[in-house]
Image 1 (cartoon, rainbow over the protein chains, first blue to last red):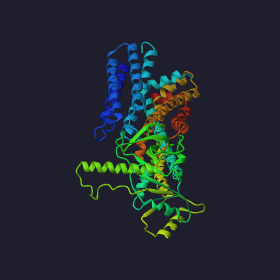
Image 2 (image 1 turned 90 degrees about the vertical axis):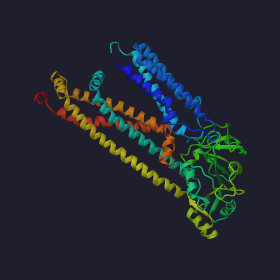
Image 3 (image 1 turned 180 degrees about the horizontal axis):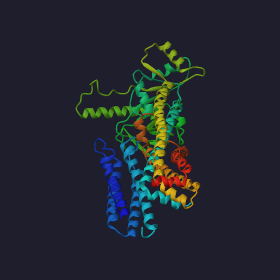
Image 4 (image 1 turned 90 degrees about the horizontal axis):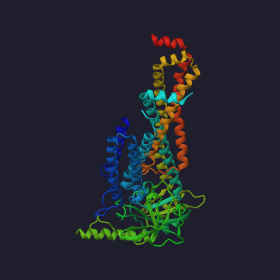
Length: 135
Length: 413
């Protein structure tokens, strides 16, 4: 029960931060005067989808009683964490200037959260797979 | 001695373990974070000293602060002086060579809402930019070629647009930890064209808004052959102060230019650096001793709580040495794991948020090479993970000196 609650809460919080953080908390760059959209905006949009998926998996983690299923959900969250890490850093990227808001706060925050998601849920999957029965 | 017993003991007293771990982790995080930030600042100051390969920088009167802002923090700005000063300064006694530069701040480029500093340099007389170019520079820098600072994203061959004009990245500079890392370099004539482009775009924008252009507060066009600074190298045996005197002797005390010795800029940075490193150093040392004290008190209290357990273990044959070994191993296990957690947590802040820290501290800040970062982590790890076992020693002596019967008797009282 403890594992279900802890992993679900972790997934809901990290999913929420990945999806909504760049929009409201550690914000991406604004629009260029004239209305042009910068590249980091699209990274933020992609992260909304990934964060939402992580949060949905968090709900599955608390519903499911079968440790094998929860291990599989944890692997999925960890893989989504890898995607959340790759999008701002490699797949889509952000603004060229190193002192833009996206590169000083939003992307570093997403990188840290994604790394923590990968570490935590890989550990959780291994724990659920190899823990001794009865515990 | 089984590690299982040690970890079993730690797990059975989870709050105690968490308290000890938290203190050690905070100590490790502060030590590692503090050491990394001060090392980056030191490297930044060294980078600045090396980067300022000039002895003296000449700017138009009133713009010395702006120049310092560009050098130290990369704050984009545009200012001009007459190019006739190149010849005038070159003819001053004690001057070995001069090289002009032109600073132009862009409007929003296609990529960013932030303004970028364009720096035009004279490719023939330059002695400042060339030593820092990391990737191969083409033999001749064309009008549309640019050299980007080490922190600007983009690779050699990529296209960039400023003031509606297309440029190509011809080379990339090494990281210097100074404002030049976020600047873009081009030929002097290309920078003059960019300055004119910028003026024309502003003028068009004002005209579109119906603002009369003759207003004194509106932008002024860059003068023909405009430059912003002249970097001066002193001849052998000549000092910057000597050249300063020679300039005053030749052109009077108020010639409309200011000569800033490179040393004075470095001194400004050094004094800022001293304040920050002094603060970080003192905090780290104070925290280490406070942690040691708190850990010693906590260990003493926790060992006191377990007197009965130790008494029983002694009565069934556990030697004092074995008992001491178990306690020490418990302390080592908590300290090692907590130190690792603390260092990783600090690394997740100081490395990804490096640019944010650099902007907040407002001093030259150069990133740490991997090997140096590894050595720093090892140093912080040793210091923080030693605090726990060291603090345990104080309490351990108490247990070792007490007789088994006394322990049990004291517990029964």
